[in-house]
Amino acid sequence: MKRALITGITGQDGSYLSELLLSRGYEIHGIIRRASTFNTERIDHIYEDPHQQNKTLFLHYGDLADSEQLTNIIYNIKPDEIYHMGAQSHVRISFDLAEYTTNITAMGTLRILEAIRKSGIKTKFYQASSSEMFGAAKPPQNEVTPFQPRSPYAISKVYAYWTVANYREGYNIFASNGMLFNHESPRRGEVFVTRKITRGLARILAGKEQKIYLGNLEAKRDWGFAPEYMELVWKILQQDAPGDYVIGTGTTHSIKEFLTAVFGYVNKDWHDFVEIDKRYFRPTEVDVLQADISKARRELGWEPKINFEDLAKIMVDADMRKIGLTPIGEGDRILSQKFPDKWWKKD
Image 1 (cartoon, rainbow, N blue to C red):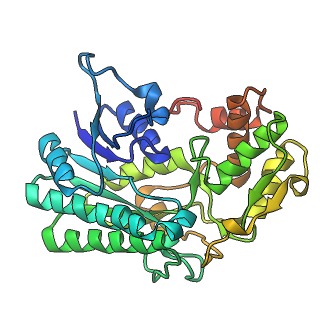
Image 2 (cartoon, rainbow, N blue to C red):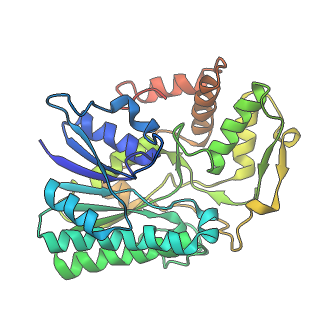
């Protein structure tokens, strides 16, 4: 039985990755932050009672700002694979919390790699890098595109990326970067724009809200489906040698286009329900992100199943269901057709 350690296990990516690894027979250890309230909603369906025998999911309190804690956890668990998904990952908020973002998102990666180096354990390390690192670089962006970060979050991710590269080359650690472009799902945090839109629409349909307030609608992103991307994350650590990979769909769409797809799905015009609020604009914007996925196609066999329109329907159906409405059903049908043997639970 392989043993994996996941930081950020309670996030969108961490929860899907946990399900994938459990389906493949792994023993999972996840790091969670100590809080006075429960913050494990995304993994409640796979949580196992601490008193249960033969359990395969274990949670440990830890903090990416505490190197001693991280070192102790890694040394005691001795994982075969480490998936570092934890971060302060909201780009707009990183402008308001620049120092905190740097401490967690940049230095957190360094602390884990130092723990691997000092403990001497043999493990494979995955770093959740980000398309935001490319920033102002001309699209499409691939593994050799120079980084031009445009936010404290992106700058922190660039630091982490090069830390991985240096520890790989300097200490012979199996360490890989997955440069994932925007990947969404019904588990996406409510403050991220895609989920803010689909959740907002569901609340409008339920009579609980009248408007959705957004920032820059012209920004273009390469949006894919998070569970698919977690399969590639796992594949990256199954390669014979470490490396860096750009993961996306190869297509780009604006936030306006996402609004059109989402509201069009329920036969409504988004212009009647969306207002612009300047507070949601970034001081420095990223205009266009589009992945060149040639390497992932070639080495990982990557071909996305869920397209832009599919994604909108899947997320709307899920948010309608969560608020107590009967979903349209097309998103559910798409999932059943394209993933008849899916390993994750229905959201």
